[in-house]
Image (cartoon, rainbow, N blue to C red; front, side, top):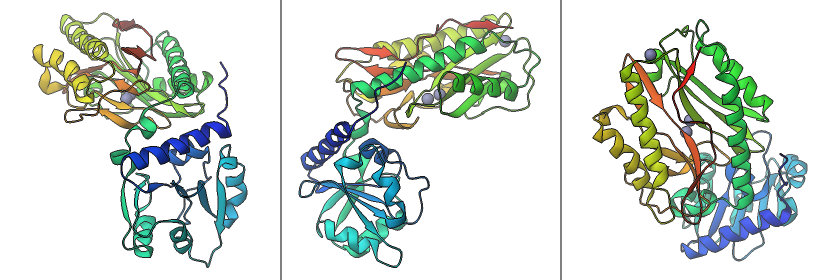
Length: 372
Ligand code: ZN
Ligand code: ZN
Ligand code: ZN
């Protein structure tokens, strides 16, 4: 499946949306530095993010302005959204912050990319001592969290590719091979299915599965092991992230029981998805199933995270997050139970919020898969 490239119009629309959302939040504008925010608004991905400032200024008083180091101007001008911005350059030896300050309101309040370097923020504050800055995700949480239809299509395609990789990896022999060996093969399959980048391949076998941060290692997988497989990366610029837990040979009664609790928790959280429901209630729905079954203390992380240009971004499905779900949001639902020294189980799908419910972007079976 080929995706429709984003056009200048798409980028212009995103920048307009940022300006109007900023005004709605009582802000003067939005300041964007290199990273996923800049990719979102302009498609521009500088080859390296350095101490030389690149800054996109979005406000109601100007057309979008992109301030770039003069040596990077050709790259910036070649970005797919470049036609929608005015590019201003600065040369080594000149003061880029003074150039930026001329575009900014000296008493303005700006939302700034979360990933902006402190170096740049401090210099802007020094150039305009009465200006104020807030975190973009804290003040404008909807900006990247709500995906348009083309973005959802890309996430669905990334999910389908990850699913296809999973269907192949469960057909290989696990017993007698190391976690790293399986993980390397899985990464290759993700690339075969169109991923340009593989960000993680967790292969947590036996007791290693009880550590959600375990990636993979030299442990040789054996008959009787539960194996947590959590993998993802980027395809056409958008992320995949899915987890399935498989078992080598026949599982014990307790392994089946724990697996079934996680499966029900994942299903309960998925069924809770609809516009208007608070993120924390998705977490609660999964957690309640696990707590009621007596395993609450073994579910040691939040239920999910947003996904888009990056594999971890707002919104977060976590206690205390009151943000209501909005159609177009895309996030993981990934409850787990981790029994130290023994095994872990996690099931993770990416889900998108539709007009009245949720839609899974991962669709491989939730049954406990027995591998060799
Ligand atoms: Zn077992
Ligand atoms: Zn994951
Ligand atoms: Zn995840």
